[in-house]
Image (cartoon, chains in turn brown, cyan):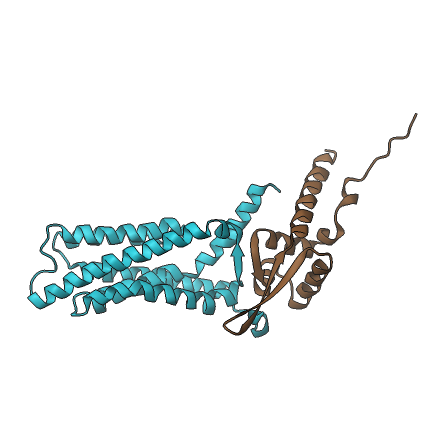
Length: 105
Length: 204
């Protein structure tokens, strides 16, 4: 008789997205096309340094793209989720929904 | 989290950008300018330029007041509806230019001739009604519920002007003042609720 392994449903969750601060960032960026730093600060209520640090982690994971543009010679930095980032968020969302569904009453 | 929840979240964030009072304030400015300074003067036809001035002013408003406080974001739904939205906005602006231009032209003629604003029967109702529809279209299109009382008051004033109780430019002026008041209140609330971010962050 084979032993049935019990899998913890949250074990497969993406650790890059799972952190609360980064989850807030990814959720905020998921509903927009692209946004600037101030927008993210407002939506996530993170400090400037904290936000920068989490953005770097998301960028390193390939989930975030930083676009530097000029508007009338004034530099503007816009942030957007890459297709990998959007896909990772969708996957995370589905896994989380499943995990919550599988929880015993 | 369902997609509808995300849509709701996007809608919530998007609506926050409409709480800055810009729409009401700028429509108010436009109507006050049209009603008080241009209509009824010799240069009535130039009132058609007011909507163009308002469009330019709205861009400056977003840049100076809204974005430094809420940040800049491009919305997915807005992008999807971008071309349609742009077309409707252009059509609305052209309609406003034409309607105001016609009213201004007739008003200027009336000034020269020293007679009533327009001789056509129910001309106030027709032209004012078109302006009411213009404001209503903006309110519906931009989901700006604060503009609905303005539309109602404007309609009442247009009907009164058609009955001869006041001139059409006075109806436009009073409507503009009401809209300006609503916009100012919204602006004050917005500025209090969203203090400007520090300089560096705002420039990012």
